Picture 1 (cartoon, rainbow, N blue to C red):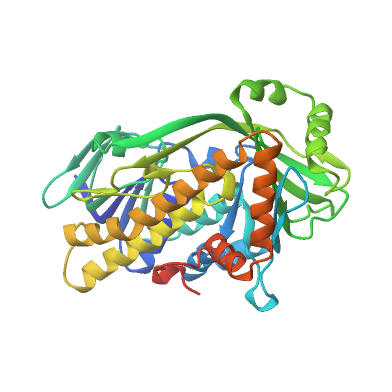
Picture 2: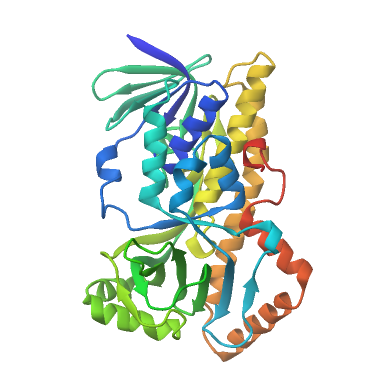
Length: 404
């Protein structure tokens, strides 16, 4: 026997589950299927990563009722400091006092816990996890997935939200442009004796960006930050194999004392870095969201925020379909989603790729040219405003759910 709903969301991570909750706010029912065990995803130490949630993404969480759950755990980003190897010519992005922060930092585990708790209490969400998809079907009037258990789930629209290696995207035959940066991001938690002041540091070195991201103090009152250190793939194993003391010593060399004395806080992890972008993000009765459609370098911390913009746009398009008496998988609505999100995600992807390559050029002359350009931005209020609006996610045509 099948259970038919409005949406069949394949992938229940940060983007997929946010989509299910946002859709429920509009009265849309969904199946959410994920291969991972929720208990493992929310276990202590499973994922040491943290995410910068932009102003627009925070508006989305507020509008779908998650803000109260998340507010106590988010560290406001008061400013962003961008520098080429800590040499003169840095940019400081700091909003006006009435504008609030540039975003908030959350541990990914905290985001998952809030999303999963909300999903459990939402009757419009049928959550199947851990579960495998044995077969996907897309017909003229409906879509379906048969699970490994034999259970059959039906809906009007299928959504691929499984991340970079999306089997739904591959099953649909959607072509992908991609390349490997041959870099790896090393993730580590740090404690330090100087307060970070809510400053997010993006320090560029030829080997890759070195980001220090502010977190809330721990219960003992220790100041904390998350480190995202990009290194060449060939150097990653050596750094990961260092003792905590040796690893921190290497990190401190690149920090120039901005956080004072530093200590390791928790285990290190890493993941490879690559770029991919699909030629399209829709097919008949199918839409892709998040990393299933676009995977970018974490250089500007925009990967998750891009996926959340996909969520806002797709939910708005589907809700408009219903208002007009059309079903969620209507081709005209999907075409609007394609136009709305295709260009924005591609533009951000190219920009992050360009920054990665620009700051990866070694030598004194490229460094001098970069610092000259950065100094120019620092002295040009209109340019700084444009960059800050991009970082906060408030530029361009925003979906209603992402507006304050």
